Image (cartoon, rainbow, N blue to C red):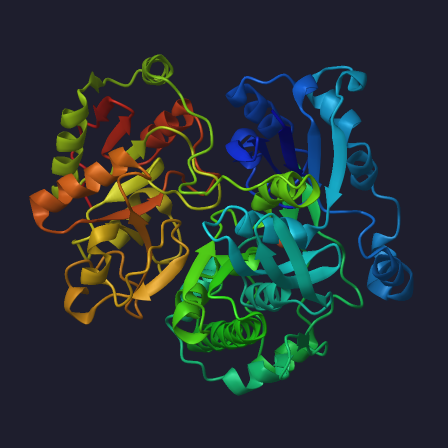
Length: 581
Ligand SMILES: [Fe+2]
């Protein structure tokens, strides 16, 4: 047996993934354990979890695959460090680089063991090869075009190529400082969303605006007939004075990258999240989103033309843009599409491990990622303990009772914390760490925001739908198992599922098949039998924090917020007080 441990360290969304003979047996982001959103450090706890889940000792690991290669593009790194003003900020030796180069020692320290007992060979896998590998080697396709569309990693912002069998062959790339991820991040910061990872908020906001500034955006990011793109550096400062991504207590912080050119062209900056959102902000967001779609669809159309492949595999932070993804099959010529659920940097641990297993060691592929449930699982005694420790009264139900009671409560308009099986890998809750609600109620979005999520009113909630019913409710029926594609909701159905239908008539849907998640599938089906609508509103089980991992965190969130019901495996708890609005 060959054991490969993949690691993403000192990059946002530190994570670990473990492959046994090419099969993914466990993966998780470090943030789920440390409870620090987007945790950057070394994934000590995620590594510990992966080894424990597989019943493997650290000394048994054959290969450690580290996402990111300090030696990749070393000439460009040196040029950036010495030749630019921005680089001089980055030039001093960074402790994390040393720690990364001594991966085995760093890992052994975290596990409290002698580094000499780790016999694994360490491989460094360039950032975008790791992203691309995570998409291609997890996909069901034997041959495909593959693209990583991203912010930056190893001084590159995008890479594409072709995958065939066990081989992944990059064909081209775009170098930093030109970056679609930073284009989006620059405007996200300009619009007052200053936290790392706030881009999805702007994607939600963009649906409320008109693309009034689209022509201006074409000057901000330029394309030509080929595969590249360029940022107009009048609008950005990251070539001159940017500090590198830093972190405070594990949470990443990215200083602003927008520059005065943006203010001159688009007006004053929105200073922060407490400032009012005006029409101009909505229109800037809409124009930027539209431009991103134009560039992405242009690149992918060109990739399709050059590679003549029918299937496309996508990863990288920009591949979390479900609005752009939802248009790929319609507008680029690709007929099949796989977007890896942990498309962001968290997924590079998986990709690095797969790259080593297949591209380096030449192992044939047998694994297909049918679902993302590869995180921690807790048995019933652990769930009981969490309830009892918190003094929460519960009933233990039989399987059919769990589904029946929960479907009844949902149909009555109650909000359910739904905690089942193994935690999801990637940023989306897909029915194992989810908060669920009735999609038929137009007021549900406001209720969820007031009682639990406390987030901006313009952000949409997502629908989970039985895969077999997708075409009945959406204009496209191609499966979207990881909630990474947005489709138009059929006009005739918008009044039927108003809560997860966004203002522009789209829904960022999750399609659910029984073989992917039997219990979640059966719950949606039970709700469908009861109401005639085989759809649930699904949002992540958290309140402005990383998604709940353990039963204790779920119970804590249940008690802290105005959630009505908590279902922990077979255990059913409800609050007595009347919920109110
Ligand atoms: Fe990345």
